[in-house]
Image (cartoon, rainbow, N blue to C red; front, side, top):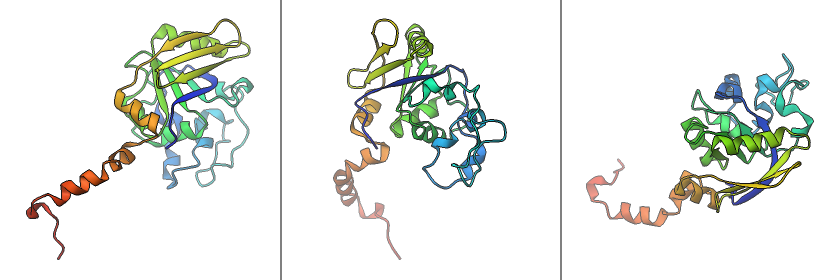
Length: 222
């Protein structure tokens, strides 16, 4: 997993509340057995014109874009920071939703309302896949969202070590905001660790513990 230390990127704003995982990636695409190739499927039922979403067996075969979908605005091309509304990622626990966001080119997602920005399972899946979910105070979130919607848009620099965001608007002065993530999640992202790779750092200690276990705890082969 790629470490997340600092990242500067363009902001794209999709300030819809209660965006569920079926909207992020429709359930029909969960039939796929691959873990990659989900970027073109992100918001498939919204980003493409009616009837133009990719086929399940060929995610690259999409029709024309829906010009009304906010993320299709030319100003949002190349954005790597997604600014969303409250309760993003609610609904099912599908990890595919995080895969789609990350493979859609986003390194971080910023939502309003501390403790209310993301559904719990989506948030956990995000940290485990190198996608940084950030919850900001409403006023701070609004400044970033408003800057992203103005002519020329905005970029932000996210510094995970300092837990700080610097807003670089096309119009107006730069501003700095703070955010909080748990020390455990921060450590894993800074070092590019998911739950499994972090556990494997203790491989030798685990092996010694197993070797010291009583014989009756050791699995026996026939």
